[in-house]
Length: 305
Ligand SMILES: [Zn+2]
Image (cartoon, rainbow, N blue to C red; front, side, top):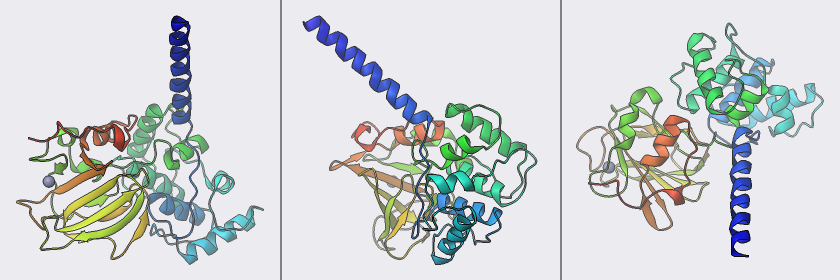
């Protein structure tokens, strides 16, 4: 009886592992709607523009974007609700590949940047973009052909594995920066020059914290959709003045040296379940394109001197 129970447990584990592997391989299209912000909004704006419905690609889903999305939906015989769900994504996604140019390429490049690739959003699908796409495809169980077709678009924009971003541009720091211990308590300091873009690691509700006289300096807190509280400190400027909803990869501000700081750097700390967590394992997984641990899986000690 005991032996049978163990066997069942093993079988159950295999099924669970199998299911999670399948879920990771096929991300779902995200739902993007009015008042959303971030790279998925920008991609929608670029793709709607590429279909002839010119929209400013500012990453903010305002009334003008909604109007253009509805016009696009009408042109495709879709329900004109202004909400970009699976059916609308299916019509929006334009296959782009080496040699392609224009807004659809920019839409893909925004996604590659969100996933940490050092790709310029210039609308030119050159070898750099193709290399990044191939690397992404290889890490997400997609055919490695360097072509952004529907499956690649869905994986790039989707919520499974696509809902994390490095907190700074990939080119701003080497991998070795992300495993450094913090000086006293669980957190991480990333040494970057003042003015470096600071991005939301996960989506959630973002709002200003601190101030020039506080130890955090000019800070931003994101109450993450994963239940954790993320704090970004010592900024030189914040991207919001009140509470806004952000997606992973949305710009939160510019790094700096404000507050209790002895040199330009970004301080990031994650609080979950009433304790500060070590961000290092999460950031390294994002950097590597590996499966990202949940906040609850992060250690509460071992990452400080
Ligand atoms: Zn620090």
